[in-house]
Image 1: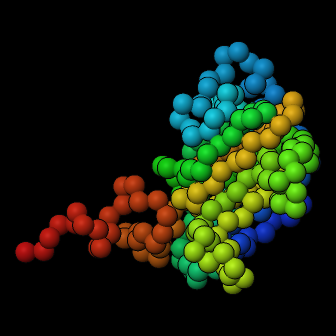
Image 2 (image 1 turned 90 degrees about the horizontal axis):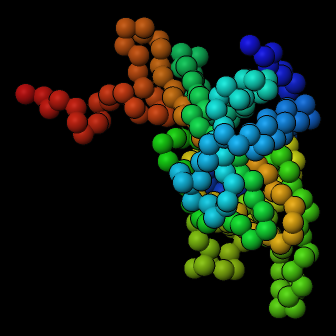
Length: 252
């Protein structure tokens, strides 16, 4: 098995832009380079599987990544640890990180998004997961290329990813809350967020490639204080029973 890269991220922050907690990670250069080399190999391989039919994007080249690819290039452990750290940070903030609680997480799918001129991702969220994330590997400077006079003074969102928590249209002059945050991607940036959070990616003009890895993950928190009666606390519900569930046996 390939030795996994252990270099820690340059920074790791969990914060609230609006309602949910989001994770912002600045990956180390060796991890970023390994991810780029991995995606180079997948893109160059004619046998690589397309993944776009599962996705919302209007993007020609979206290719499936396997866990074995991550392991081969030594990045599997780091990717998984970032997801786990994000979940642990969020659980701690909500008071759900008790000594008897166990937090487990696992990436369940990943794909390359190789975006070019005029391609885009419409507003969407992700299903069959609790956590979603994106890592940026190629981020050309696409700003300032639209010369529309009517756009002068407006924010240039070309190539940005935007997260939508609520619509501010009914409170256009409110300084107490914002419902949309657009982020300009940078090489080595990882963003982690709840899978239900709507987001979209703006198109851009120019011949360069904007490349990222998108991924989904599950997590589960359990109370293991009684090994004979492990209790579900939060996260993925598959295979779990709970006193509050509708399908629980009605008492006689």
